[in-house]
Amino acid sequence: MRRGGGFTLIELMVAVTIIGILAAIAYPGYQDYLRKSRRADVMGTLTSFAAAMERHYTQHNSYLGTVQGEVPGAPIASLFASQAPVDSGQKSYNLTIQSLGAGNFTLRATPINAQQGNGYLELLSNGARHWDRNNSGAIDADERCWESRCS
Image: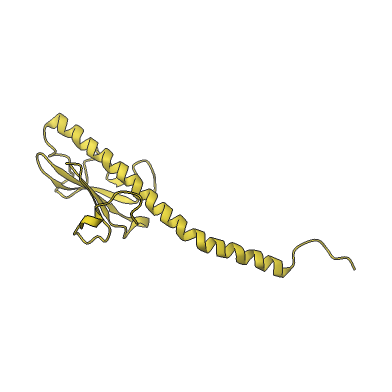
């Protein structure tokens, strides 16, 4: 009797098991990569948001008038977008103006959707950058981090 060409059930099950193990190892790393890339994107967005605030200050000699309603709140639509990333359909951060004075401001990116629980990022008018990893409201010295080496 001639044996037909093809795979046996055992060979197929071994291949499926190997693929499953590789996927189980790769998927969490991929999710971590996406989380860090979204955070890096919002860092750039906050910097652009601060530049828009400075343009408003140059034109009006004040940061006042940049918020829809009361502070804290979303920026007016003509100033900047209220969610990030600005140029994508899948939003991962809400952008708000946390505090506002005649000569200073604090911008915040609060995580939503897939970024939920990743902690908020803040950018102050003096250039200080904060990341509250735990959403605790208290930013310790070791939490002031925007670099990609932070988890």
